[in-house]
Image (cartoon, rainbow, N blue to C red; front, side, top):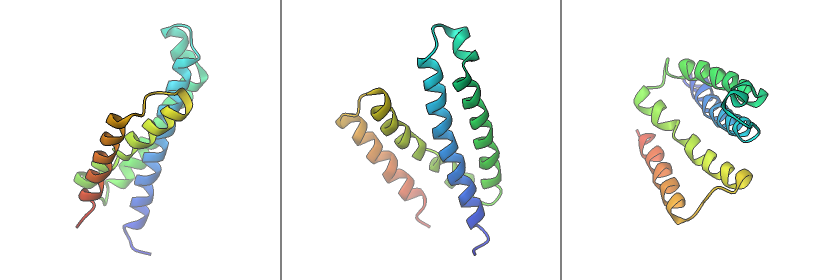
Length: 114
């Protein structure tokens, strides 16, 4: 196994947990009547915890992955969140969003060409 593979696994885990954290925070917001209730909502609290775990994995990842590669890779979460938001909350996913997703995806692919 290449020595860098666990660091890329940590980066992937950080991205996936970041997506999960975003979905949990949105769920907490949607299920709360006001701002105070939103911050006390269990979904919000768990969302913060998931973000903390994502940050820990990201710190592990940037030990060996150049930050100029790792940080832009996190933009993959924008793609996942946009699709999930469309499926769960019927947020817009028209040609503007699809074009943006394609540009983000293309940028991530370009960053990983070495």
